[in-house]
Image 1 (tube, each protein chain N blue to C red):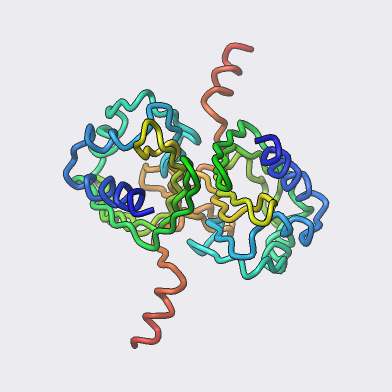
Image 2: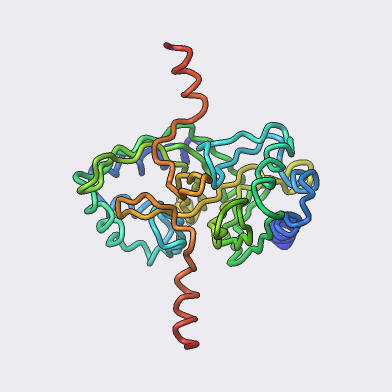
Length: 150
Length: 150
């Protein structure tokens, strides 16, 4: 569990360095991504860092990622991990950046190393007919904590 | 693997029957959901079917769910499953319904039964500044198949 926790947190910390090759070393060559932006489903292309580099270039600076509420479930060589990640990032030309997104990782231990075989990142969207992505949400617990603090 | 496949497909098929109690029997009491609608993170409340009933009531009729591209990774008592699900559903008062969403399930075998411990459902959103949820996407493979068919 600690090994997986380290991997998830180190991978996240690497984002702001912009070192896409080091980040991609945490992914299985055959990984599949459900990312924040379209398309629906993106195969990992053998760990090619080019798509990640392209995504990073859409921001003013490499985003900073902080993993919160990480929960890991593991048996044998398979695990899944859930978290709420804080992405401090302002897309080029945008007034505001994202805040929290939900992340689910599917991990496999291959040749003794834990690798990300699947990554699913998202924000929910409003069901009020606007279809607007809910980019400004905080988790329910934090809202309550804030209320208590006031 | 076949056991997990059956569970994922049976749970999906149950949706259009509107039998929320039967559906909730596939979830671990402690499951955590990242759903299409806010909030960011929803604890399972011990398998209470009330939130699912409330969600179903926002549609003209119980949605029909078809699981496609199901891929399962399992070892011991832990598994994760990914799919693109077709939700045929029109929300009350809306002109159009959803189409495909991405689904990642985290599963655990508890007392010999596979249960959903985590469910993450989403659509991506447009990174063009509109923040609009991308509800009308088809997977890249299908687009290509359609082009070939024309």
